[in-house]
Image 1: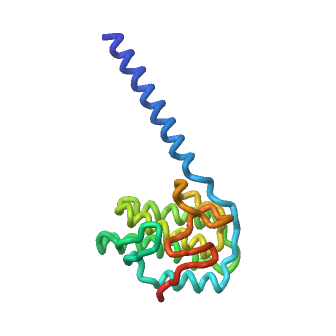
Image 2: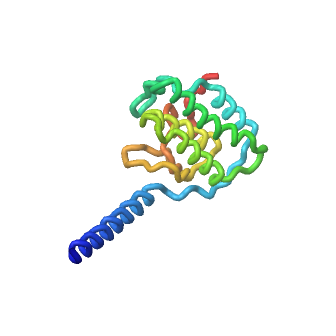
Image 3: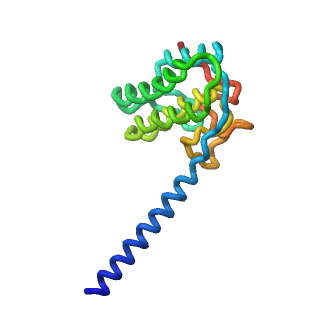
Amino acid sequence: MKYLLLFAGAFVICVLAFACVLYWKYTRLFPEPSNEVVQITPEKRAVLERLRKETKFQPHPFPPLGYTGAETPEDRARATEAVNGVIDAVLAQPDGPVHARTVSNLIGKAMRLVSRLATEDRDRTGGYLVEVWYILGFKGATGQFAYGAAYSRAGGHSETLPPGWTAADQPRPIDP
């Protein structure tokens, strides 16, 4: 019995050590958030206000896979609330400097709000939030997303292009 308890204890320690290594490797997938500071200008504010007014989570054919729309009306409302919450928090700041870490933290909170939605809806939420990131003019990583090699990035940028964008300075049309 004594050896069985000793073996069980050693086994538990090994499992915990293995779990810690896996968690450490998982956290290394996410890049450090950028330390950039950009300026909120009236032009950027106008684009963000248009994005805020847009009806979000509608089907679209944008690459890489297109999007069929939110799974349920409740999911659409929750995801729209998350995206608009980030936009509202950014628009609440006066024109002038905004720190990347501030926006990154807002994006992280928004992604936690949609963590239980369908994968496609979470991915589309991330697309909208990266769009906010690009509109503001950040080039570094948000620190909130981990991408594989299959996702293309715009030259000089750490995040993938949002759906519908053809280049970092060529956004998709935003419907009013």
